[in-house]
Image 1 (tube, one colour):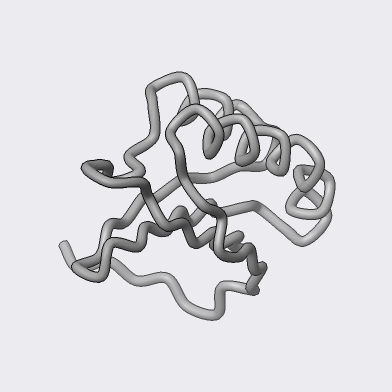
Image 2: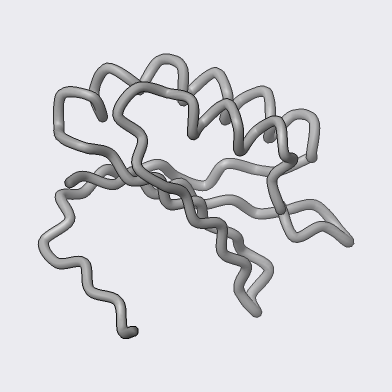
Length: 94
């Protein structure tokens, strides 16, 4: 599994929470396994999208860039960075 982590600085009085449409667009991309959005005390937000493998992660870059660009413009978010990672472990407690 692979992950794309995008870091944002939301505008004043915003958490950078995604719209339902943004969530749907990302989850509808082939190979997308899930999505997290996080908001920190330092007024930064993160999106973490999970992907089946490195190929689908790479194949999604262009569309993900478009979604990120449109969403950040609509919600007045500054994109601070985008990184990709291999997920080495994934464990959840029951």
